[in-house]
Image 1 (tube, rainbow, N blue to C red):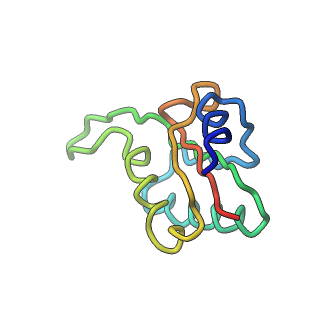
Image 2: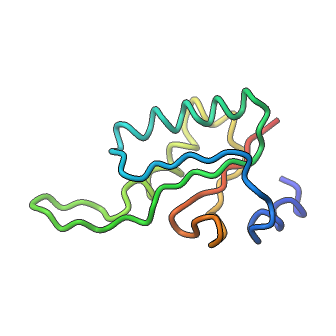
Length: 109
């Protein structure tokens, strides 16, 4: 990734061309939706997309759960097949685009 583009991206000066909001989805529902979205954006020639995961509430129910499960899983999913050949860079979003609760995904040409 070009250094100038990367710098503009992490400063929040590049505007994402598309966004996917995964708030409220389960892990089982979010993964296929993420794969469909990323492959669709790549097929349409988009380069910078925003994936919003939310920060997680940290629910304390009868079963222990990791707060922000989507926030922790999405980067792993983006580096697995079938997305590994499509995704070039994954970076936490600037605060104006969601901060800790979102990721910039820079796609290959």
